[in-house]
Image (cartoon, rainbow, N blue to C red; front, side, top):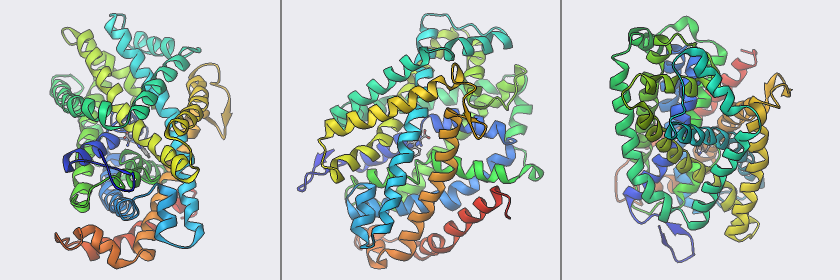
Length: 450
Ligand code: TRP
């Protein structure tokens, strides 16, 4: 990134912009959250809805966030403020900041698990020769107070990257690590085809079964589409505020969504054949991936090496995502509350630390502390992903569809006349009618009104 006149950073190259945005989108959401949500919600039914929502709702809202970010060159709160003179819109920015801190909290816990698994496999102590051993291993690692330590370690890494600046450490690391992760995922996918439960696993994920589409499946798939694309909170808006003027927003949105979907599909192909081969349940929830993956490593020669590498890469992928999540609140504290970047980073890391500790204990000492039947971890995940993200996305699409000056929107998509954007009117139509109505109907449906 280089500095612009008004002191805001800007991505030096188009590639840098896309790579960093993909880095934000691809993370635990694809590799940990997607399989667990798909497993809980009937596999193929979820998959179908997820793909539809990703392109029908996700891509247009991503375009809308990009447009707002680059047009305003501002944080999420400031973007609504700059692009309209009505104060009410800014509240969306506040929802985004609150939800981003909630997500950062539980996300850091899971990222902490990956660090713990990485270290344990490095010291060759991962023991997954049978189902109970796998489960007990997970319970040993995640109950008690020690997950807090791993959450703190993760947040410290996140903190260091944030204070050093995005380009130096993380951009370079992710430029090398993300392609390696991609190759490794492909290798594990190929391995999946050799497993005995391959057919069953793939059918679970890909054989459409329309009877399984229930309100909770629709809501879950919509939440996952937003989560996975880092949408709804202004994360992509903040990143787009660093885009240079020649980045083509429409193309960028399609590229990011496609890569993101590909990684989720890879992850599904890796997990579900293994679930059925090893006699596990696809409905295990947030613990699914951590209980299944080690089985896969176990039956590979030099499994410990694969495991270490995989969890290391997953850890890096999580960092590229949490850096983007943290940017939402940090840019807000800096630009609206006039804090120094260091102070802002300390404040948001501290909030995440408190939230993260509560989430970390949700699998152990605070297991029985539930609100509306959900542990703190599950509550943060559910509220932020299934409610705040779609609401944020809905407001953003209404804002760009109805409120922003059409000429400004058009200029952003055509780079001020330098390129063509044939789908402009379709995009506006979708943002005006399709996204808000669809999101609203899914909400009504999920509370049983429809
Ligand atoms: N998309 C990321 C993932 O799949 C998570 C993420 C990063 C996110 N930034 C976000 C989710 C902002 C919601 C909002 O892992």
